[in-house]
Length: 433
Image 1 (cartoon, rainbow, N blue to C red):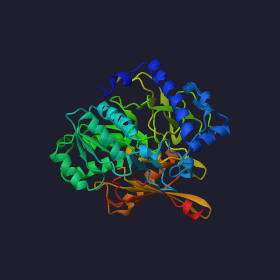
Image 2: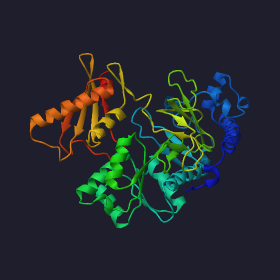
Image 3: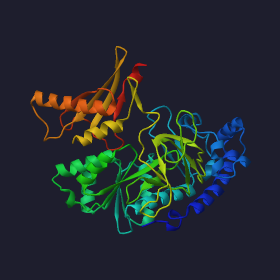
Image 4: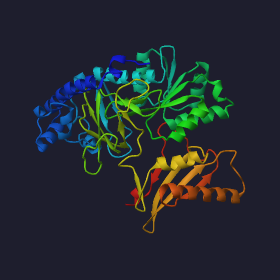
């Protein structure tokens, strides 16, 4: 099923024609209306007339999150403020928040992208879509809410938190599609089991999960606990929000909405554009955003693009699930470590995805401590049992990571549950430096 079949199944030639027309207009729009980016183009010696197709995008300068913070709040605004109807914002965990502006047209296009994602997982106007992403400044709730409306679903605008109420509405109103972060989906599954429900007791058929990294092992765990198919969705506040890319029934990568976003993969160190199929940093250009039109925005997400034919019939390029980030990758004792590697080990070893990674520096040497909750079934008062499991897990982690962590198995419910994005990593080295 498709929300907009004529574009979702368009030929490569049709997609390129759309992109080429849009990029010429967008570069002129940005150059004429965004002084911050015009200065970057002038510094690089690039003029709008140099951009005749998407093949010329590589001539343009990159934008980074640092640029967005430097230009805060209005420096990257691409239209008169009177034309803007909304802002969305990042969580602002480091430095200034990123504030993105939207015209009504921007919102309509964003919601269409989210509608495509909902239909791709089987959503119709007969479905009940429960949106548990945060509403307000966070893009998750607002994007999927609008997409659900466009599809015609009965929309439950739950926002995050109050899990008891989430479950009540889910069961009483027979929700069929769940939208939230994967860590919260795991928590809802856990809470349903604790309340005495079996997976077959709910009417859910699909989940649309994003906003944080998650592994294939976690996907299988969520699918089992909720009795659903779990689908990935990708987006950034900087480019609009969720719906930039989404998974279809094949669950084999996320289709990028290429009529709205042009994707590149670059070497994160050199900025060189890499051939299709190579792993590198994902870069997006918004082809028709009016209020916040970012060109060549470096996402810092590491992934691969592929144009292999998809069984769903969609023709847009697919991106892999992000394999880590070029900026929050942990370097511990000279070794590159990604939280997703640790999560993969835990789920493979049948531990729940409730964990926290603490990195510190003691006597000029990095330390890596991993706190892992054990299930009620595994919980034991015998210290020797716990120590044996910790040692076994440390050995498996060492094989995966290339360095030896210290594993701490802690009782159930010890680690604070997340109703939004899970806080997986605490790097105390940053506090000391």
